Image (cartoon, rainbow, N blue to C red; front, side, top):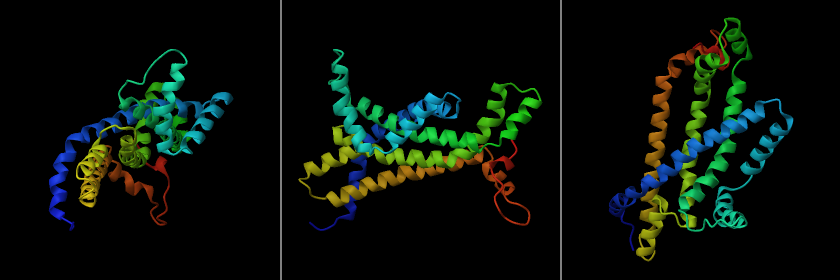
Length: 248
């Protein structure tokens, strides 16, 4: 069959209704990953040696595991583990296995993002806050978090984009998201128009990526990040001075 560009735009409306599952996986994984990642980052930055080594070890192992393998381990392995305690989870929705696998993965990724963001803040800012009588909570809310958002936002946007794309692996265990729907359409067509369907799917993911980039830039404007960028450069040398150059 000859390539039919018009078919691309006729199949996109058939994919969009399943986009909600893809977005739900991404949002829930991001929220749970940030919570678990924050705990890992706290352990990495703390003085408890066993916890610190455990957090770094977890991050090393999980980041070295391909997402697809982690997903299969969750889907096929977790029911067998909990079955040892007399619990049957074989009938629960597949989305829970996807969330478990991706939360474990992105918690490791986000913990490194949180840790590096915290360490990028000049320690002198903590001392300055203490010298004027600010409490730990006030320091966190008025100094650390605003600067942390400034430093972490671009990488966080990239992480969300990666999460949206890797979420397409969910169809491998039978979850029908936008990728799973595309595979079903190809099967119903007996393999015909597969190229057009994959191009349509690529356009959907391109649109998602475009929206994430726009949202990231909007948040940059909201926190006045773009207005503060000139302070990163010396008057004569043009070399970066670091994130502590921005005053909040």
